[in-house]
Amino acid sequence: MAGCVGCRDGEGFEIPFSMAFQPIVDLRTGTVFAQEALVRGLGGEGAMSVLSRVTEHNRYAFDQQCRVKAIQLAARLGADSPNTKLSINFMPNAVYEPRACIRLTLATATQAGFPLDRIIFEFTEGEQVDVKHLLNILRTYKDMGFKTAIDDFGAGYSGLNLLSQFQPDIVKLDMELIRGIDQDAAKRVVVKHSLAMLDEFGVVAVCEGVETHEELKVLRDLGVSLVQGYVFSRPTFESFASPELKLAS
Image (cartoon, rainbow, N blue to C red; front, top):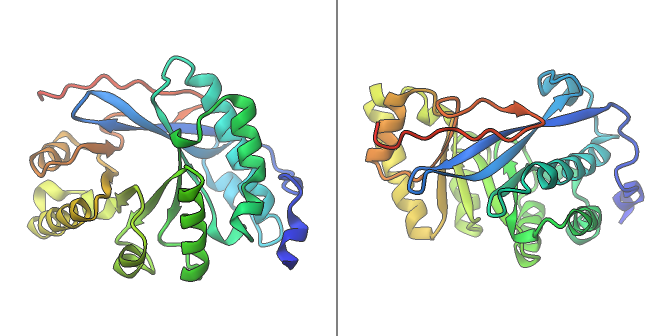
């Protein structure tokens, strides 16, 4: 198809950048379940210093470069954590044909010795995309052995309709549902029933944006296992954080 003329192994995005990583913590085991790769400037500048330079014309190249940098850095940093997964944010609108556009990712993972079943591809539900195209990407990635995740669930365009058509491995509940949940009975109801629905689907829930121990306590009481947020660690530039978990607190 015409868009595949742009498949140049990531060439075409000239702004240098790197990655920070933020852990997703497993409360049951006291271990890091996954590290999410987050784009940063070369000096650790915030994501917008790079994302603001992404256009329709260089989006494909940027998306490809993000995958390469995330895998290469994670392979180097995670040599002592063979079970820790890597979560990579991808742009569905940067994928023309999933099996063609995945070639550089496969080659990078093979070269770095990073198993495919430890890579999670997550997309933000807030990005407006053609649902048919998105489902094709997700199903293809799942068939190839990658794990898939919906980020910011509850804040975007597709929501329950998408979940009814495809059940990813992981759903990350939008942080606005988590923020202040200890003081908001309505949020507790929404999260409680969202967790029950995801459990019935066989989908693992991650609660992101957890900032306080009070929020964490409510989530633990609701049976949440995987959490992410400042209560454990902020994103750390070009390194893996190893938060000390006080599970009894």
